[in-house]
Length: 136
Image (cartoon, rainbow, N blue to C red; front, side, top):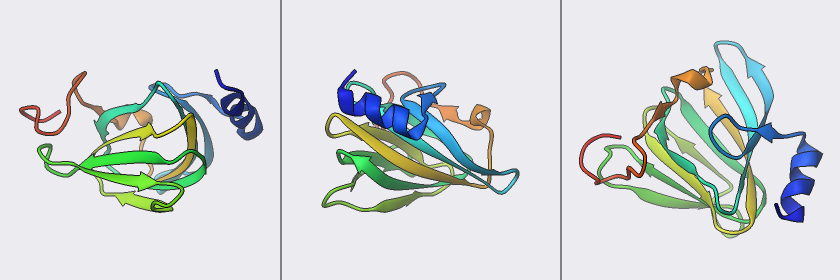
């Protein structure tokens, strides 16, 4: 693991995420919103998934990141978050999304509204991507 990744994990007090990367919940207003930091290191990515909540992703530090999203499961758009890209981006509820760092590591802050448990995350089939035939 790269030194910069280790330093960010320690400084932010992050723990392994149940699905990918490293995270720490920063604020939780039961039934209203859930906020957390997420670190994605090179060689990992957030697989395609949907949430029954809107997510605001905000770049915090590290290398830029690509957020790909698809409202229909057929076409997708890629948004760059970070240096020379967007500072934050809203992904509407039930939109397919995936995240991947463009460098060694990226830290994002996420805000989910309304608050949902992680068990409500809808995972797409392994190796699924928009346009791959059918919903994830």
